[in-house]
Image (cartoon, rainbow, N blue to C red):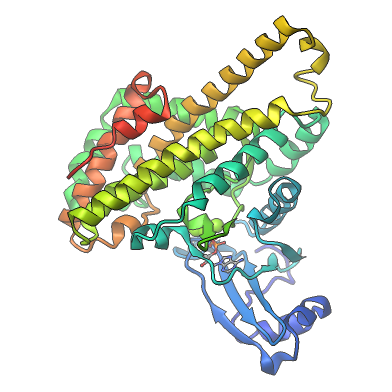
Length: 418
Ligand code: ADP
Ligand code: MG
Ligand code: MG
Ligand code: MG
């Protein structure tokens, strides 16, 4: 129970609520009778409404005191809305229009009023439909590169970083979800897991695989201890909205200070899962081959763009980062050493990203939060073919990281046919 004033906002209450916010009401134009309201919640956690008025549209998101898809039996701290809005405000100077504008935060009702994205659709739906959006890997690479450079000790004064750490350390409700759902549940018997009958053998094998559990434990420790930069924390294909020309990152409620590779790996994981699901979406071998070529190219472009942008931020950085004073590397020999150090930092990010990518794939198949890419395959036996191939790939990545030393090796290991 968050506070005595908190009330769950219903679709029926929404116009009166918005009418009580004069600046927001003015953005919609007209009056309550002119506003069309719609419930569009399709995520796992929160209420989301879209409102259209004569002057414009808005998106209204409220944190519920429980997990929306699970109900009241799974309580969840409503302060996640505060962390989502804090994250969005912290990112805004670095990512600009790659995220929706935040118009209002109600700290008593845990409601965020933000720019309504239209006609944007969720990236996951586009991937399932086989609709290619070539801007997305470039834009998301730019987003993560800016975020992971500017909030790290490479750019932020350590006092700023400490303030971020102190603030987002409070977001433990959602960090608990990641620790449990990503790094723990898929490797134990847990009532939350949604393992289908055809995958029961895979789940049992993963629970018994000590090498795999050791690798996942390392990933879990990296998530918890590697305080590298401010992360989105849930950057999957359901947290990205797209048009042919625009990309927007939404839903930063899982924000935390953690390893930069976590967001990178999560994004790649969902392209990889789209790849594994594609042959089972019924569109035929030619369409599968066409779309898979595009997905493979997107993964390559994404990483190459990230690497180039991250290095460019660093090389061009004129601020007074404590960790890398420019005066240490002024002469040409030292400058070469600085470049070596930069490349080594990015190589570490890549290793982390590949590790987290694999963890994210496994949790989407053996854990609680399943994804539509697989769920749209109606027959569980057929679906399990796609999922098992993804599991095998993820397991190989975790057990043999040396085989996946660059992005080309990762893409080359994705099977070309089913
Ligand atoms: P959750 O935290 O519950 O996952 P999301 O922030 O992901 O909630 O939003 C759920 C859905 O609401 C999205 O999948 C999208 O369809 C819609 N949505 C969210 N934000 C916006 C927005 N700014 N404009 C338009 N639609 C949005
Ligand atoms: Mg979401
Ligand atoms: Mg969600
Ligand atoms: Mg969310």
